[in-house]
Image 1 (cartoon, rainbow, N blue to C red):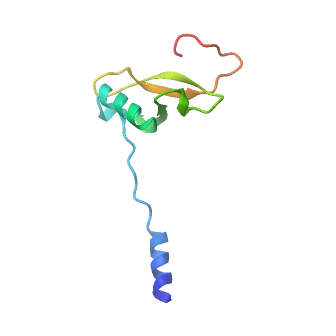
Image 2 (cartoon, helix red, strand yellow):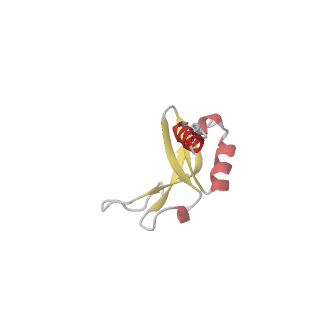
Image 3 (cartoon, rainbow, N blue to C red):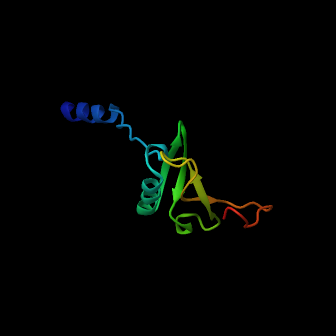
Amino acid sequence: MIFRIATALMVIAVPAAAQTRPSSTDMTCQQTARLVQARGALVLGTGGQTYDRFVRDRSFCEITEIARRAFRPTRDNPTCLIGYTCYEPGADDWPGAGF
């Protein structure tokens, strides 16, 4: 019984292995866009400590959100269209350039 408790405490005490977030700056434009397309939605690093959630299309957004084109830096392109970000429009917003 003591062995089981000790084992359980060790499992709880061991920190979870850090998972690294994929970064757009480590991949080419095509690789990054394909990753977003393949996964549908993912959190992607965009350089340094910045990150955002990117989606394949509006179906991955909340019902009140719209999808806006997302241009982010990649290894080979400083303004690569990698997918979309979900955006909650405000009262003063209207669809125009960028949607």
